[in-house]
Image (cartoon, rainbow, N blue to C red):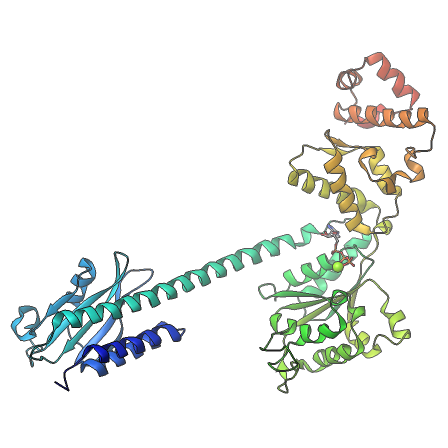
Length: 499
Ligand SMILES: Nc1ncnc2c1ncn2[C@@H]1O[C@H](COP(=O)(O)OP(=O)(O)OP(=O)(O)O)[C@@H](O)[C@H]1O
Ligand SMILES: [Mg+2]
């Protein structure tokens, strides 16, 4: 009695061990190996295997096995197909086992399906030495429990796999989208100053050179940093941004370089720094002028030696990251004030791109405004076709302290408040209204203000009708005679619109 296999308590212990094997290891194959080993030991298995169907092709594949290969695949197939267990108490009496090479000693054969719901994902099959008084039902029941635990592990693995695949696909898709978004064509500008910036971007993108981008706030420094990355050989690797100004001094170092577990109170696990996250790709340090002197020293080391250490760590970590830094303040002033290291500046200053403020590239204003008009009209589902000439004049005479960002906000606001299909001067924010050239300064006499607005409307109508006064009159619900009179009064050059 003592050597009888699987008395209830013993088999229960094995099941607990198998459960542990299937739930603790992250990978399925080692878990199945351990599972088979446990069954083999508990049941004196002569030969056996665990068979699983391939997630994509559905073909049955022996994942793990022990003993001499058995030629039992036909039985396994029928168990998988029927979803029902099979027991052959004496293989010597079963013709299916009677093939040449199988005429050895008598055995008991068990095969149970691995089921998720009604679907068979494989089978567990074992051959045991014959044994008197074996309770076949109990053995089958036990293997069914094992098979259901394997089914759970399989299910988890397949979910993880498909999730991983989904994330991989999504990542690829997002990268493509980003690449498109940061394509050169999305940086608008045709004037000389921007042409020079474009040339610089294409010169430097393919090299691994550190780039320093300088320019006032809102001039497009971040856009340029993206364009450099997505046009470089690192485009498929990460682009990681650090807003140095937004991080407290005490955090910046650990953000950049990461830390080891126990590096300081609260560091209960290792954390990757942005350098590590950007490995192989580009690290964009925005507002570089804001970082403290201690961090500057570490940054200098990465630039010189291409390695750094995590906080609380003493293993140097090799780094293959391209640095792009941006600043809207002259670093020379910070150097003079002793808050920025001259040697770091020297390292960063290898290739500098100066982005000109918008007021110095007036020819770009119309282009950029029209670009944003199209973008926001689409976004807000509005049918706005153009910007009136007076509104453009207002934009041209404004000094744009917030640069392209301010122009973008201005157009978005105008799109929101515009209820027709043309952006007029009065759709622009008050800051632009005060410009002298607009003729819409609020403290002008009423007649003059109304006149400017009227002129604006007539010009718009003439533009729409390509200079046809009769049609313009219809549009404005006025008469051709009045329009002729006003055109003369305001000195509108109708031939301008006849094209
Ligand atoms: N030439 C351009 N063409 C199209 N959009 C632009 C251009 N320049 C800037 N933009 C847009 O203007 C906004 C501000 O640009 P960005 O954030 O790159 O400026 P920045 O120089 O980094 O500003 P800050 O110094 O304030 O961080 C963004 O929405 C950007 O897409
Ligand atoms: Mg920026």
